Image 1 (cartoon, rainbow, N blue to C red):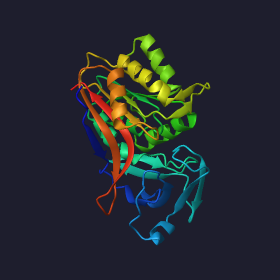
Image 2 (image 1 turned 120 degrees about the vertical axis):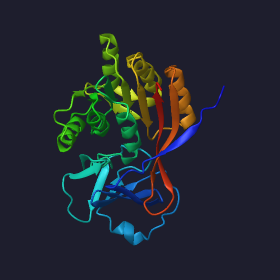
Image 3 (image 1 turned 90 degrees about the vertical axis):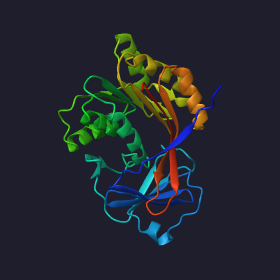
Length: 297
């Protein structure tokens, strides 16, 4: 068996976001006009900037529990008043960032590498399915490129954020279906309906609950979900694709690659590896997630 090759996708196409420093389990970021300190378990090295730079951040997140759970609740300590949300742009696409109770800022800047990949393939002849779609930036990138999109998330609050971003981007008339549902249950229903999609984007949590109490554990469900997503792809269409991102689980790129290839034995091109953010003032990279991408050509 030929071992898969791995690559690192670096999100170096931002103006409104910058990773200013990282180390000692933390990261210092500029998100729009504000600076934040958030936990970062993968930053095992020492910070390079002076501690005073960290101390002057506008907000610092402290988790309620110690560990690598990216969804652990906590609290923000602010050094100045912050608005409920503030506008940002990526490649001319306007959206809103905001603090949340789970250390997130309603945007994952490393995903810009996937937004560009998906938007280059989205067109009016096909439809993209965005599962676990959160605040909708991948959906908006595809819609702006001329594609139709079905966006699914189990959280009504996340869908509301996504629709706010749709308005901020000036894409109110874009053909996006916003659906509050359990992602895997929705996929299974779409298979029974005979629906087909040009592309599938999925960023599943390691654990979650659907709107009707459905439970999700990525270690138990990922292979089945990928097989079902393969069944939804329009096998006769051009520029078909699938993008999978995985955070905060004990999976290596090799384990993810072999899981994806076994679950989706489709002809085409696979790419596997890590996603990373560049530091603004030095050549270090901060790893953030592992990924698998497939395209028909």
